[in-house]
Image 1 (cartoon, rainbow, N blue to C red):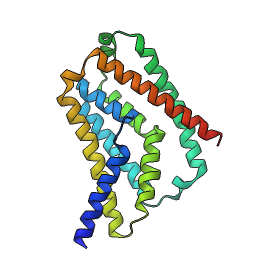
Image 2 (cartoon, rainbow, N blue to C red):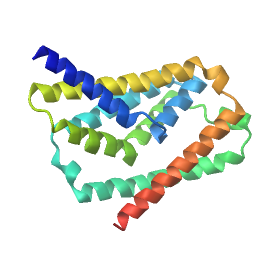
Image 3 (cartoon, rainbow, N blue to C red):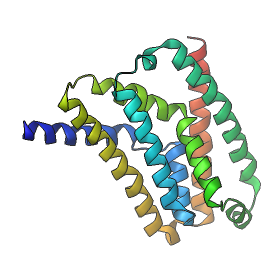
Image 4 (cartoon, rainbow, N blue to C red):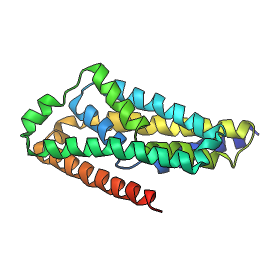
Length: 204
């Protein structure tokens, strides 16, 4: 039983790492704060706690995550938020690196609020945690379900704080105009792609 518990826990961690590891608005924001050393651990902690809430909602059997109305609502909220986020990113492209850098240094409250917005108003995070991870948890019952949930939370912790630590460690090498231009363009292309997919969902 104990071996099965830890196997399930480890499997949950690996599953979540496979789901959330990648370039997305939340991860790019976390990495950006770490490179700038701008309340990076507060941002990572905020994302982690917000993710825990979503993972628990998804894994504890809430049926609304299967509702088409719920998914439609998530898409509409996401389209509005990501459209605004995309506009801000495009608007900032023509600013010199030094100007952008100084303007994007946020106070702690603003950094936390942005992290919350990019977690709870981001349909990708909601789908990952509520739908995909929550759906995977239905394969486990009783104590094994809690083992999977614990593993999912552990995987999320490893990813967010690992990303923060690595980005902070190599901040001097990464904090260059060309790197930021690459990050900004990657973010714009990614968010534009997500928006196209979300709008197409409305007509399917």
